[in-house]
Image (tube, protein in one colour):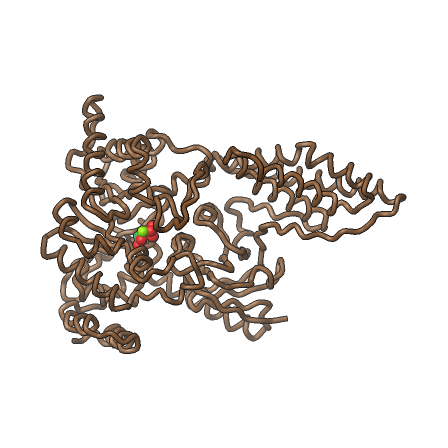
Length: 579
Ligand code: PEP
Ligand code: MG
C-alpha cells in the first residue's frame, strides 16, 4: 500500500531504492510449544541459524578492503567471538530441549538473562558491549526467520540501491557511512542541525530525519522514494509517481553535473568582490571531495571524529599523521583544524560520565581544559603538523576570557615542549575561536583582542540563543536562522570583526545555505565554510551577485521583526539583487 510521510529534509536530492531496516532490537519474538518429536529438528534449526551467521561473518571478514580502518575488522572479530561463546551458541539449545519451546524463544530467554548480567557490570567498556550482543542476536533471529542479515560490503555497487531506515543514528554511525555508498538514509528522530544531520549533509546523499514512525511502518526491501529537498518519503509508490520522481532525480543530477564545471572558477561577485569558499570535513579522506568541489581551503576540520567509533584513543603520532595528511593534500591552501569538540552527542566510547544536560555540560573546550594531558597531546600533534602546510587552530565553544587565556597557555606549553625536543612547527600558527555561544557573541571585544581570527558556528549559536536542543526533533521547527536575535548577533559579529581587522568566517550550516548567501554577503561576510557538496551552489550564487546592491537590503532585514516580512525581504533579495 502506498503512503507518504513528512519529516525534515536535511540533505537535498532524490533517492529511489529498497528499504533496509537498521535494527535496534526490541527482541519481540513469538513463543510456542514444540511437540517432543519435533524438539530435535528445532535444535537443528537453531544450529543451522548459528552456522548461517558464522558464514555471514566469514564473508564480511573477507570483504574488508585493504586499508579499511582497523576498527572494522576488530568489530567483526568481536561479533564472531560473541557468536561462538557457548552462552549464545550452545545454551539456547539446552533451553529448547528442557522448555520444549521454539528456537526464537530460547534465544530470547537466554538474551534476557545475558543482558541482565551486562547491566550489572561496573566496567563501562564491558557494559557497552551489551549492544554488540544485541546485534549478534538480531542476526541469529534474522537467520531463523529465513532472511539472512544484510552484511554491508564496503563500496559495492549494490549499496547504491539501498536506503537505510533507522530509528536513530548517532553522528558516529553516520560517519561510518562515508565508507559506504548507500543511496540515502532516513530516521525517526533528529533535528536540522543535529550533528547526525550535519554529517549526513556531508555525505551528499538525500536524507530525512524526524519521520516519527518510519522505522516501524516501512518494511524491509520495500520500494521507497526519498525527497531530501522537501523532507518527503513515499513508500511503495505507484507507477505514475515513480516515473515523475525518476524524471526529477535525473534533472537534479544534471543540474549538479553542470555545477561541477565551476570547480576552477574563482568565487568573485559581479562587482569584483573576492569570496573564499572553504569546506568542512570530518575525516582526512574528505579532503578529496573538498578539492573536487573547488574548495580553496578547509574552514573546519571537526577533529573529534578521529576519536569516535573506537575503543582506544588516537595518540599524538596518529593525530599528527591525520592532520599532516590533510595539510599536505591541501597543497598550501589554508586548513583550519578545530580542537576536539567532544561531549554532548559526540561521546567517546570510554566515557563513563553522563551529564544531566549534555549540551550545557562538559563539552568541547570545557572538556579539553579538564583533561590537560589529552589536550596537550592534540595541541602538540597540531603544531607538529603545522610544519607541513598552512594550519590554523580553532577552539570550540569558548565563552569567557579566562577560557581563552587558559587555552593560549596550553598552546604555549605545547610549543615549549616541542622547542625542548627540537621539533619544528609553524611559529606563526594562528589561533582562532568559534563564536557559537551567545556570551561570546555579546562580549566579542575580548575575543577580537586575544585571538587571530574567529569563526561563527551558527548551529550552536542558534541552539543556545533560541534555547532549542539541536538533536531534539520536537523543537526542530523552532530552528530559525532568520530570527531577529540571530540576524542581529551574526550581523554584529561580522561588523565588529571587520572593523577590528580580525578575519571572520562562518562554518555553521547557514554558510552552506544558498538562500542565505546574498544576505550574508550583504552583512559583510567574505569567508564561508560548508560541506564540500554545497560549494558549487554557493559559488554560482556568488558569481550572480552584486554586493554593492545588497547592503541596504540586508539592513532592511535587520530592522524587520515579523517572520513573514523577513521571508519576503529575503525572497526579494534572492530574486532581484537590487537595493
Ligand atoms: C556550529 O556549531 O555551527 C559548528 C560549525 O560546529 P558543530 O556543528 O560541529 O557544533
Ligand atoms: Mg558547534
